[in-house]
Length: 230
Length: 307
Image 1 (cartoon, one colour):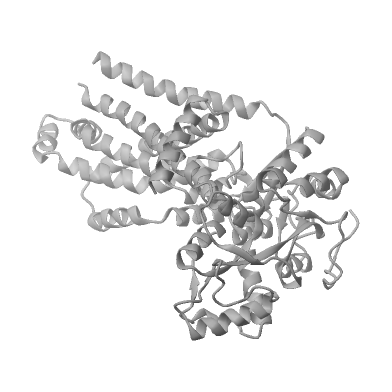
Image 2 (cartoon, helix red, strand yellow):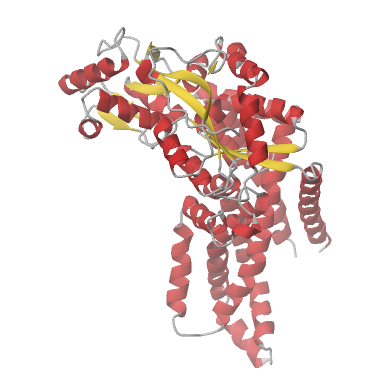
């Protein structure tokens, strides 16, 4: 156990110091895919979350429960669902998205949408109702009110974005099924780790895990920095 | 406020840089015809395809080879659905179904090796020197008698290796159905590497491809030893099947056929025959045309139509 961990740390340092070209390529690709997915999903989810929060409608509770249930959907199931859609036998075959980074982005967007919508709604509900009433009393329309509340809840929403990014960059089900783990084209951190493990390169796998966490730390520090500033 | 802007700008720059570098690396190979190959993990894991791919791309610079790997079952699905142009697999029964139902055009054997029956070095069931079916029978008998001493770990994942294991149980007259609910029989439900680790932990026997086994023993991760390494029942033949363009018009049959021809060309066969010598001290595969299949083997059905 200890030997493997020490070996993994040595390998991680070696890979970083020597600027291993394959590692750099995989890092850029992983970040491109997961950051794009997080960005796109955020742009979709935060407004939807705002709308769900603002309006009272029949079945609102049920809708929120449904969204929260989808937090638990296994990544492989999301991958399979999208695979059936974009495979050559599927209805969206003509988009040629299978085995492309863009296909993986769509898969990760689908994967993290429920978390982002659900947490946005929760974050907005957490804001005191007085602010909503005050905004309306001051003559704000629906759009202005939602923007005001989102601004109030920005820390919690940023937390949801960080969580969603974490789920996107660490998932392997969509990456394998939609990406196909093609070397130099769709291979990302998690699929490399899974391949190296099945090859028996345990230390290299753990080393890649450390590097993935280090990169996630840097991204999270930047996002935290962003949210900690007024 | 200023710091916030800096952070925002930093994040935007990272995203743009990532996209830019990515787009640049993607655009450096414009107008290439893509050849998508789905394969079983054991071929991908050994690293053989990486070498064959490099040599092929050198010879055909206009073709971008993309090897999709994700387990046998899904590899076959990709082929069945026309998501790839070529399949490299090692499951004769299912390969023949592919030819029969018109999904594949032809089946070309390009390499073989043997599955290995591996187990603890003290060999508690005493299978050394037996052939594969006798050995499985013995493991079943001894396992029944001493389930604490004699165990067998199965992949249990419908992989090519698992299919072969089932066949050996059935050929040995023990019957696969009978072993699956025995206390000495465990299913890992995972890939070969994980299965070897489980077998090692439990001091159990298992069926493994030689490449994965050698790479695990080389690093001292497992102390299991190979007990039976040849014989008809363990022969593992790798075949290439291009996907039929009549059934899936979008497939790149030209590049697929070129790849198959390359695999069986003297150049391709030399790469296959040498692969593994440096890393494992012995080659992992025997190329097919230069070394005809051992004569004790029943002739393999060859349903090829001239390209």
